[in-house]
View (cartoon, rainbow, N blue to C red):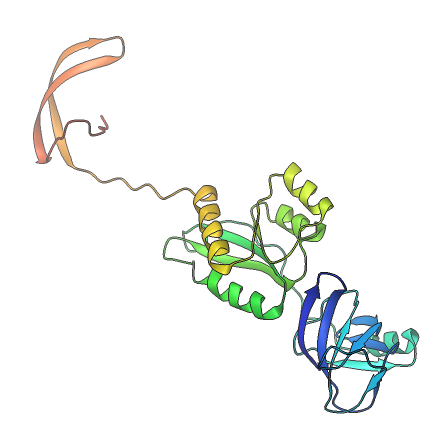
Length: 253
């Protein structure tokens, strides 16, 4: 089973595994969730390269093509064809909802987020902190949350939803994604400190969702006489029938 996973800046996606039974060898073929991987780098808990490991042993593998999720189960096979046959027997994933448009929910605007982080622990902590930004006047919706660098697929998802901010914690943005985001005005907010990143997200919220403007009536005046009218301006006289009338306040006639 996958215990932890992260993006190694030098070796790519990596995962810590616990072997339940059997032997895991370097160069074995793995089926992790619905991905087929080859064990290119195999290390023990001390970071030393090993050739194999047995039951109840924690190991680290790196150089994967995709970052698995904590809790994913893995199996080893003699070849990729056998691994594919096994994957084909797995039940289909539950249907995923399509992109959610940034319309208001329950009368309040929604701020959509695509979250990318370096490790699952950071991802979960940051997602929980971002959800706490929701208030009575603003909704927070995390469209996607995963470990890994920011890529073109993330920017394309932001484009599909029309309004989404990509938030990255201790990750890089590849050149193609950066250029695509720049050309379509997709906001990418990144940082190395959670507190600073959350503040940057709050600033992005304030920029993209204007504050709600509410009208407060001070009083009501009945116009009794028009004294002067020229060049679109008027001088009128009247009587305050309710509340107050105040200099420099706006009026609606």
